[in-house]
Image: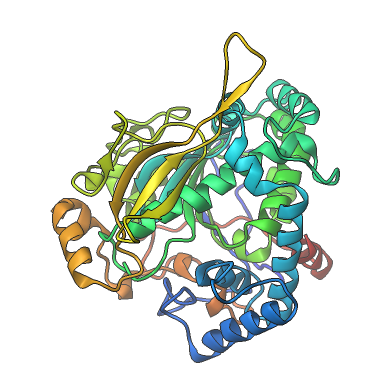
Length: 457
């Protein structure tokens, strides 16, 4: 499997890198697109693979059926990541469960000190509080905040403590461990919240991915190089243990030397993740983002209408009005670990704020367990009355923004369920993600050896 794309512009041209779909030849355009390969939208082959994976996991003691130790949407993430090969999905799932147990990931998330969590949150991808047109949470990441001095101090402190009750296996770099509290927040707070919001095109599909804007404006070659080791370790661990949680990735502000940097970065991800990356020139940022995200949910910095800056907490979505019922004086979600639990006999779900608050005058940390809000449990979609009631309370404008014709979907929505061995590299240009303009693509010529190394990572 190799990529066969055209060369990038010359670094002497003085222009920024144009928009391009960084695309592996392992994927092709799909007429179906999202949500094919997701729960409720499985082919006969995919459905059988899910049933078989459950049997294998149960037989080998890695999963219990009644009650289910892991939900179907989680198992499907591993199947999509391993191209529906059951044995491969089992191996990755088992490795992940062993890693989680060895590093007490659940304990880490529930007991992490809030100051330590906030330090991590302000450095890495942050949920804006908004969603793309399909109802998938939108994250923003500004790389320039990760300078070598900041990372060095972050890792130094992390090497001494997990800032929680968790113990480590000694194999995972301790300086990175608390970073995974943020991935837990994605899978246990942001995605479940977006799943319960019914103003989206496929409300029957649980949300298991995220859309990301990665801003590399102002980052020099030296800073990229200094971050190489840290970012590589973090990316490979995330790919291994949180598969299929990333969907579209928009890279903004790429300097003229980015093709050099990309030579390193592409090896940190599997080919499927690589195929989801867009590199945008400055004049293409606004029209491209608007293809996938309603302008009201795009930060003003990128041509949208949302007053959001990197570092702040997510901005409350007007579509939450009348759906979320705030408690304990809250009117927005606080920082720190959050998770959802069924309440009221399963009719509603409640968001609880966890973690530990360090006493100012004492060398102790007090556990936090506060109910922030509740909302109707609308998913799984079983009671149409619940869905109808919730949808009516959400703004018509937001609801309309989510609706798109299946025929206008791009291959950005292709999951691994749709992958083939076709060697024809395709751009997004079928409908033209930048108002019909698709310029030169990055040169991603890879050897078969390089590709096998990426897959192994």
